[in-house]
Amino acid sequence: MYDEKKIKAELLNIINENTSLNIDDKTMWRSIITKLADRQETILNEIASRISSPVKYKNTVYCGCSDLKQNQLGDNWHYMSVADDFTNEDFLGIKTDKEQSDSRMKKDGKWNIIGIGYLDGEYEEITALCGKHRLYRGTTAVGSFEYALVLKPVLINKEKMLHQIALQYPSEFIFPYSPMLRRLVYIETPYELGNEAKTIDLQLTRNRLENLHCDWRSVWNIDEKDSLIPIQRGETFRYEMQPNEYIISYNRANVMTKYMYDQENNARYIEASTNNCQRPDNTFTKISINQIGNKNQFAPPHFYLNVYDINFEKEQLIDRIYSKADLTLYLQSFRLFVQFKEASPRYVEGLKICAYELGFEYPQPTEYFKFSQRPTLYVIFENDHKPFLFDRIIYVIHLLQYKFPEYLWKGGYLNE
Image (cartoon, rainbow, N blue to C red; front, side, top):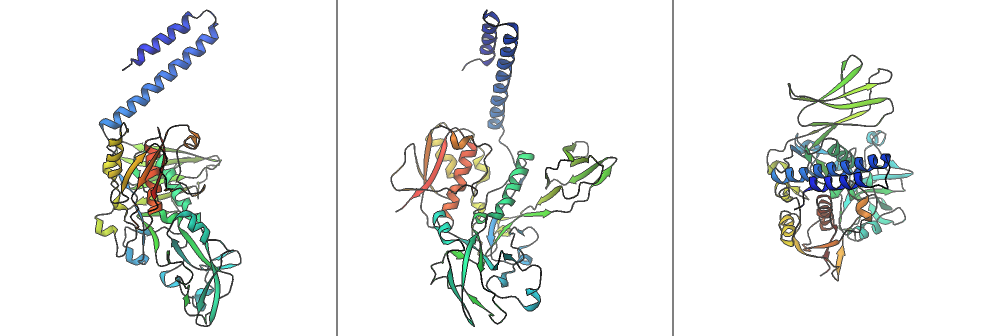
């Protein structure tokens, strides 16, 4: 093992003895070498501290899908869909006259939204099924009509908000990325379906849309609060947080914020000030992460994707991959979520690579991953034919890329 302090001293000595450099050049290079050496020592110390004492997350965010109504989910769960104005009865039904005039009725341009659903399958297949140019025929009691499936990535904005909070409060909580956010489709029709059409049959089998799940809702254990009332202290405003709460601020030109911690009272808060000393309304969003007491509380009947299958505790124990055994041990911690089969430094014939298109991808800390010339490792998973296999693989590959950036990771399954 090399001695970084000795190498630093040797480099500085070479600079000092170099007769071709003037005083300014020597000063510049001494500063560069010193900063690089200090930065390297900081990184090595951080790695050593993570290995000796694995990070313990205080709060965990869980995402999933449920067919229960909001009032049946319990206090710890909240619908995360932007289409929350649709009740379960409305998914495949027509609203009454009173509901028709309600502001909750949604339109997408000139098209009417009659429900939401989630499409399961390979991502290329899903995108091929969606779009207003691809029409399907459904029926009502008074005749037939045409409808389309419109893929909506709007829920990913919620995910990006969580990602920003994770960066703002490092090591305080971890959250899984939900495949349902990338599967949401609006069921839309260009026709006005009147009240005489009491029931709607989308003819899923006839349209070969068996993988469209219309009676599921994406849920999470997070409660989001928009209207926050601060405590005014002179020219500043304080937004307090409980241990399970986090605040994200939206950049505003006239609002300055800083995170504060009162060690004596064990209190956390965001302090804000404005140029005009006015209260910075609509600048902050607070989320509270509800604690889940037990697994049964998390998994209501017919729960579609149980993210408890991901073992977050075990995955933290490995911070570097030095051998295939290390990789196998890490991936086995996800065995109930997706089953690892083998890894290869070369592409395996018949391997279906799982990846999203740009815009649906999981956020990365840097774009460098996409252009790096680092060696590629192909990870092959078992084709278990369970729901959301494509998405489960993408999620684990994202974790590999995030945790072990020394490789470029690609994952998939064999078409058997």
